[in-house]
Length: 324
Ligand SMILES: Cc1cc2nc3c(=O)[nH]c(=O)nc-3n(C[C@H](O)[C@H](O)[C@H](O)COP(=O)(O)OP(=O)(O)OC[C@H]3O[C@@H](n4cnc5c(N)ncnc54)[C@H](O)[C@@H]3O)c2cc1C
Image (cartoon, rainbow, N blue to C red; front, side, top):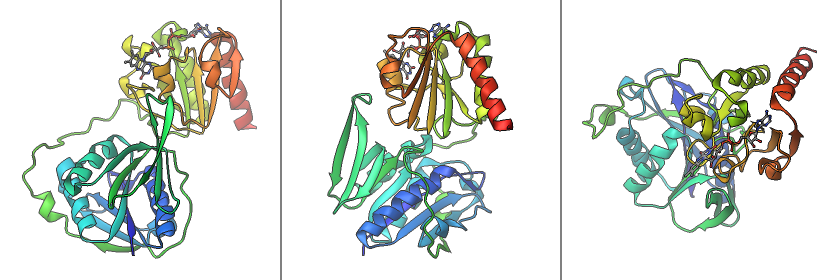
């Protein structure tokens, strides 16, 4: 019997939503293989592995120790590698978040197995079939994995978490061997952004602004629309380079890749490097005064107009709609 392991992600002991996405992907492959979906949760004392049966976990392995409160690459990778070596696993699924992008390659190196980074879909079709964007998102590459095990990092929001009731039996495993180990590198602190912002890479709605806003202060138009919609604020590189917005908000080839249900590009031309980050957005809305702007080639809905007139009206209408 071949199983699939989902390595989950927590912050301060609470599981992040990407964990349910990774588990849903693991469940669907396990169903194809006729095996089990297992989850591995590493975190500080008090981290719960309960409730994961609702997302298809047959078994949850929980490794807790306060020394593992912050992500420690080598220890997390060793705990995951030990679990994979202790079971019969066909694949390991991780979210392609900042943590997963660091952990996935470490784990694949420890296991001496292939890694698929930044997958946008994963399915079982007589074998594990994965697709991922290549050439800055200009093409989608589909591959069938023949090696076992393999490590697959899947983009946040690429999979919709689906309920699938299983036992979700929790088994505590020793984290102490890794927690006390000398480390080649240590995470000593994680600095939170000043504002408790929604992470642009994980948000289901993103409102992004570009150089068309003319100056940093005008970004309040973007913030107001984002707040009305409960969305994350994103930015083009032009405005990040200008110092108007933090790099954490940059969307694109050298920023974050996003897969929201709804993406607003406001005053953004749609350069290929920006488009590389939004290929898997489900619906794209563009506001630009230049009807020939490249963003309109990928937009599902386009508004040709002055963003300074259109954006406040849109915010007003969204507020009315949500209040009514
Ligand atoms: C190696 C490399 C990596 C890169 N990585 C990234 C990346 O990760 N992300 C990224 O975004 N870029 C990236 N870039 C930069 C990219 O090429 C563009 O320069 C950048 O995306 C342009 O940002 P922008 O669309 O905000 O600005 P502009 O291209 O200047 O576009 C501004 C737009 O606003 C519109 N506009 C102006 N005024 C108004 C108004 N009043 N109302 C409505 N519309 C208006 C204009 O018509 C225009 O289309 C990268 C470039 C390189 C070379």
